[in-house]
Image (cartoon, rainbow, N blue to C red; front, side, top):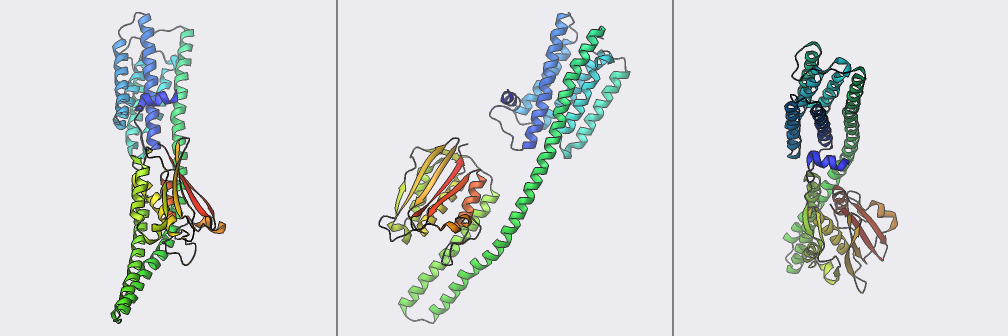
Length: 424
């Protein structure tokens, strides 16, 4: 039922990114649907009493509120608000002006004023204030004035009590809906503030490490290249110069990899997630084609066991970064002394998620450092040539996709990185 109402208000295939705006749209839609239902009920009652004069007014109100829901479905939410709340005020005024005060029709002005403050945000507070002023003005006009568009209705004592109970039964839950939304928004904003503070603390810590490690990892290769250039200048042996050039190339490649890692880290934090059709088998083969000519990879067997017809809907760039880092890590830390060095990729469907594993029979990772391999700039040993960013970027990228990653490794036997991403 809840989903059916949601689909009726904003459309089955339409989505609202902001949780706050979504709740505001749903609340205003509830108000419109309740008012439409009340208008239809009064239409049936008046038709049974042979009262035809109010019917066009009810139909006008239903038409305006239906138009507002149509605007919600087209994403024009603010315009829908401008229609819903003046129309609701007009509807309640019609009832309140044509009935005796004892029916309690005036109570319905209260949830409308509360609803206006709930659906308009702080920047639009003056609109909410003006709508509240309109509500108050119509209340005064209905209570103290004699003018009424609808014919005056006369009720018996029992009918007055029944109308009061009905109006109260409508006003109370709608008021609660508006107040509950305000409480929910306050709680949500408080939770967002806590999360933002936690993220800010995390970013500050990462920034401190980033500045320190970046200055070292950028300067070290450059200093090394500068030293090798000086050695090459003073050396007339072509073989020695060639060796120096090879060492320079190695340092430049290390620097280039480090800059690429920084770029991947920046893009993951900055770029929005896109949803695309990804043929993961083909993507993995493309990654291997780019890596297989490195010296370490030429003796490794690449076993791509991901189904060729598998298509997932996710962010291509981020999936590429994840697989590239995991495969290149498996190459870098392989054990080339083994008879059959390999890297195996597999896929498993897990409920509403896709699970991928990158397995190797390489060096493995010691248990005492497995919890730290995903830390920023962490290197397992001093001889490591990596930037210390690769697995950290993998973890952050998977987290951005609302997924998870797990490591299973045994020293001298190999490692398996398994990451899971949502199917939708």
